[in-house]
Each structure stands twice: as structure tokens, then as C-alpha cells.
Length: 428
Image (cartoon, rainbow, N blue to C red; front, side):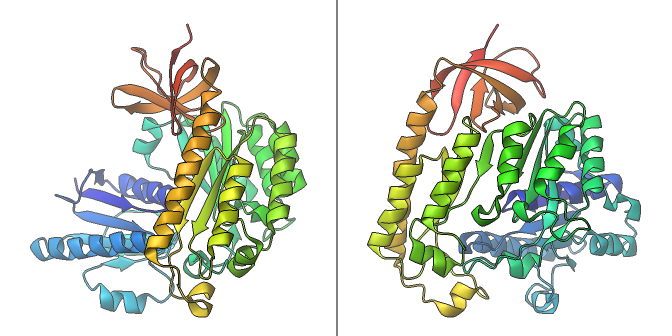
């Protein structure tokens, strides 16, 4: 039986697409293994959103070049955001790669596979998922919209994944129903800008409409979605989160900066005050909501005063989670063309550390309020001898118990808290 290994880096969309590719290979008689060693086929699902990710991709491609010199029959496939429509240049740079295909372009994968004698059928282009992933976790990732039309000045995604293309409601519902039949209890709907879902479809169904459709699926317990854009979250969507019982009380809401001039340079199309009002509305409508955000430090021209505004916003908003990154110029983006990367690396690192230290203190305070309380945890698996899962508000919880809790909902009494996770015991 031929063996394959999929190496994935980057966002949840990449993880979902790797699941899809794994499903194709499983159906074609391949066996998944856990490393490059002894693989007959390797798939790299790449990310170039930040320089650090791109460096890892290039390093791995170099490693595979050496491996292919030793094993000429090794087949190497590359997808993800490294690959765009102009693959000729990439083929020249990486002649050891057998196939370069754009993110989500499964037709090209199928065509290549059939030429290689790999029995991947066209019928598998829908609703196919990796059975290994499904049986090992009650949670699944479901892409609902591909691409992005926003063109934030720092972001390479629209140039790599293209313009927004939504999947039809009935297709998504059918996929989720099939997943639930296989034991999935929670789905996360994915898009580079999930709030734009449906604008390109006949009748213009929106994300709120889709959430209502999925809410009626029997045995589906939870629904999540990401990533959101503050300028596109509607009052209808907020009301749906508040009223639809299977939609979890958690939102990823990237702010990116706490200064209006920086937000304008980023082409985010909202002000700090508009973001503040949005958060207040969400918290008023959904009192139990937990909020995660993204912040970029060291954007071109960011002064110390402007950075301090981002720091102050984090202190004011009291997010549950903050993902912070130092600005990394991406060739081809608006910021790369129009701005000089003029903030020293040392200053970026210092600013990043300040955000992280502040957020650790805030998260510690927020999570400490859960001590002694009971939480409903959907158990996703085991790690380090402990069961783990998440609450509806996306808090990571660990507990020890001899029972088989995989895929079950457990009532956990929280005994210990930290900024990053909670620990408890099963409430008997």
C-alpha cells in the first residue's frame, strides 16, 4: 500500500484543505504516515502570509529536494498560498516538485492523479473528508467561502486565493449532514472573510441564513465560524448568534491596530470608535460571548504613540485571546509597494512582547473568574494523559478520568485556571 504524508502550515482553511486532500488519498488506497520518511507521496500545504511561515516552507522544500535525490520515485505536491495562477516561475524554482496546484483546486489534483494512475474519482470532489481525522475528533472544519475581496494593504491572501467565491447553502448543509452521520458534533465554518458569505450567490443568502439552516440538523451540537471582518458583521448576524442555540458564544474579531491612521493605511475601512461600538453591541446582545482578536505591531510608520493606542485598546476591550504578530512585508501587497518597512526588528519585538504580557495578565483575570464553576466541555481527545476539549466560549479545558469521553459532552468543575487553559474534574 503506497504511503503519504501531508505537511500543513498556516490557517484553519489550510487544515481543512489538507483534510480534504487526505480524504482523496485515503479513497485511492494510500496510507497516511506521520513523517516524510518512507513516504511515497508528500503534500506541502503552504502559507506565505508572514515571512517566518514562508521561510519554513522554503526550508521544507529544500529538505524534500535532498530527499528526492535519494528517492527519485518520491512524488511531491505543493498547494496553499505559495501557489498562485503563475506556476511557471515556481516550476523553475522547484523543479523537483511534481505538481503545483492552487488552494482548493481539487480538479487539478484529480486530473494529475488520474494521469498517474491514482484512482481518484470526480465524485470525490464533494463531501470527502479524511476518515482518520473524523474518527479521532468530534470537530470538523468546513470551508464555506474561498478568497477575499478586501485587499487590506498588508495582506497577500487576495492575490493568492483570488476573489470571493461562496459554496451554495444546500451543498454545505449536505456536507455537514454527512459529517454528523459519521459522528461529528461540532463544525467550524471557514472563510478568509466569512461575513461576506453568499453575496455572490443567487438570492444572496448570508451567513445568518446559513447558520439557521445548519441549526436544524439533528445531532449537531455546536457551530462556530471564522474569520470575521469588523466592517462586514451585520446586526442580523449578531441577532442570530444571540438567538440560534447551536451557535457558540465566541467570535474571532480582528482589530489589527488601535490607531485610526494606521487602520486607514491598512485599508481596514473602520475606525477604532466603530470597532468599539461593534464590540459593545455584541456584548450587549450576547453577554456570555468571548472575543479573540488579531493585532499587527510595527506596521510601516507606526509611532510609539500609535502603538500605545493599540496597547490601550487591548487594556480597554479585555479580549479573551489576542493573536499578535510583527508586521512582515509581503511582496505584491499594497503596503509592500507603497510603504517602507521602517520599524526596526528590535522595536517590533518589544511592542509584540508588551502586547503579549498585557494580554496574559488580562486573560489570567478573565479565566480566574471561572474557578469553582461548572463548564460544558466537548471532549476532542487526549494529550499528555489528560482528556481535553473546549467550552462553548472556546476555553481549552483539561481533565483526568478513566472513562471514554471522546466526542462526549462532559460537565467539568473548574479547579485551576491559567491565561491559556483551564483544569478541572468531571462533575459526578
